[in-house]
Image (cartoon, rainbow, N blue to C red; front, side):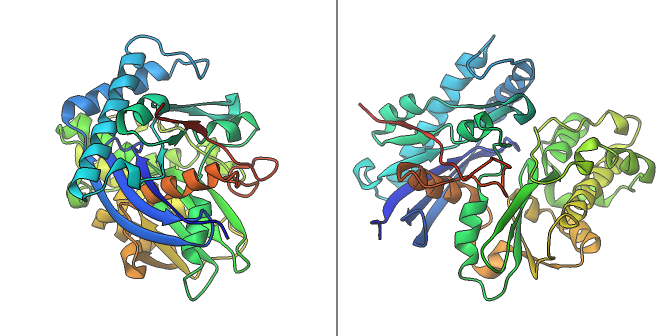
Length: 368
């Protein structure tokens, strides 16, 4: 048995809300000792810089290109992560020498696996130098280069968490900017894919129409009416006819179909759209799960949770109901994946990303 390592996971998701940091002690397989976690929210100016990066990156043709302000945004983003790690270690009385490895997700700015293109901004070598800890980064690239979707990568960690649950099959639904589903079968088999939008479309709609970056407690959506015609058009997107596994770019779905709707009606329609997309995804599973465990920021939206409970037949529960912090889970997963990468263990599988065979990944950067 491999000795467990102490790892930090760093996640900056497509919701652009901040940097999640989580501590995990793990052997990358069965040993999972979950530690403390924290979130460091982005300031409005940082969110604006990342939004601009998304627009610039939409024209990228290669992984290496950093046109316009993209290179400076990547450097700044790395510095923000270094600051988050430094603050986290200081607040928990930890020295860098007590951390064996950092799993660094970076910021996804374009994800086009059909073109074998995925870009997560983040300079692993710079982060390693700044914090004095080796860093595993660029964890999606090898999978995409091999013909996989490059996402989702969290399922192997979901499987480790599911090992302690009393009944399977079980499914984990992470509602970040994009929503993704992991199905863990009774025998530990995995199937995973993005179901559709998560918070990103709702957040963008709210920012554009109210000046607030998200729909707090679903209040705006609760005041509106779902437009059935617009919802039907959104659900006709070719993505929903594609077999799993499959993944999405944050900007796959555009909201031009909602032009003319009131802010409240648009929020209500997009919230229902997220839930309806999840219901469609559940229809692709080989066996319906006994529980649908919700994690990620979307679980804080009571209107979205209500829509999910109306749209699916499974028992819908928040991750906290099984003792898991749904805000830190993805950052924990990146810590887990970093340890697997160090040990050459696979992080993606035919049933999770469509890669031809189980595959490890990640690039190691050292402080020297």
